[in-house]
Image (cartoon, rainbow, N blue to C red; front, side, top):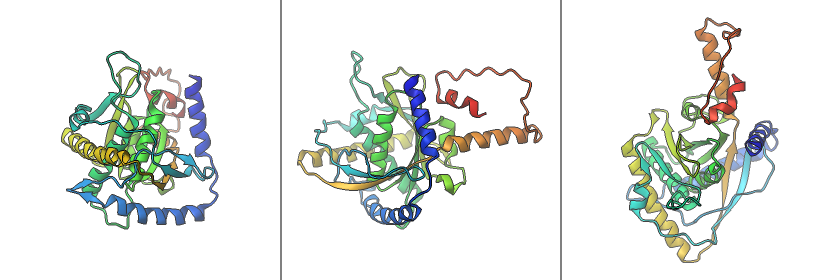
Length: 307
């Protein structure tokens, strides 16, 4: 619990960071969108082509500026194991993706590795670009949130790398609820980088601690089974490019743009406003009630006090 509390404090601190270097942020965003869009538009047979860099590490180059982090990205020195397309397709669980993210349980090998996760994120970027049909001057924007699972941070970083390497503007929410992630595609609030074009929730619902996975959203709702299969097929092709490039021993560096936003405060505020409105614009419509909340270990339990 102490570790979880620390994460909450960290997210709150990030949300309160000042707005220094705003001019630098604007210049960087324009430069980033122009360069990364070229990578994102490199399509091969209608599917996103990896731009030649493998697993990358995030390293902060500047202080938080309203949650904005400028990072160096370098290829990993760790060899990437071979993963077949059939292995990717096995990760599909209906309209979600599920896999083993924590090693150590007998008979349950690791399937949701960081390179696999990066490829899945890049696959989603390619799928999203095809659906949105954006012109080259505009960056796609995707939000990422996660529940309180111990593998959440590792996967959030991997998803961020996969999206950013594909030329997507990444907005991290940190600990968040699944409904909030969908709502971020509808919220109109540019201060919090909303609305986003797509959203990824890192969660495995009620599954054991060593599992994790992804839910995907657009403003039209959650993705369906055919969409998930499409993304996994794209991811398998992208992963091959990552592995092939890594086997050549090549190294490359690039820059990533990741923004961290306290979106849950916006979501909670909007929910409170909706309840007040439905109750006849009463300031405290639930005053006098004794309410018990059982969040079932879900992320929503961490935000009860916000309501």
